[in-house]
Length: 244
Image (cartoon, rainbow, N blue to C red; front, side):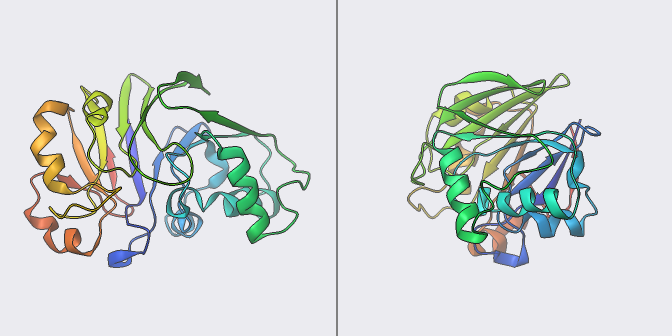
């Protein structure tokens, strides 16, 4: 299985990186994990056809993780001429917040008729299910965003992907990443504790407990960017493709 880091940055573009967005390419059944505000720019830069993306999983409702969706949806309507269905799944309250974001950016866009089917689903912490052949499990994490933030565990094609989303340290991450083929985890700072966010020192200290087969760091702030060469785990780069 392949995964491409479309964007690996924090909310403020530190280091010139795009907001969080990961692509798992599977032909016309590809999916995204998060779709931050800059994601359409990043997708275009990488030459990725948005019409191949059938499903988008959203970890939490901050603009650098779901703010690209209004642009994705309107591009599908007016530029990409999408015909195939699109499924969006996020935490409780996702549907309402998405509609509000669309109305702020483009009044009338949330209710305008579309030429493709759009399904908006919500998942609570602790929920399991299957969407378009992709198994998912959610855990509650610690990140204030006006709705329950989620860590995601996705299963498809015989592989498992765990993703922390944004969170301060919680033992829920041990359960989330246990035995995963790939665990993508926030590392906003090197060792400085910031409420609602994760530092690399906490990841390093708990890596053995987590027991993921592969850990890749993402969502870097300035001090973490300055020390990436010192990290004992892989770190994501915008546009990078990994195989697992």
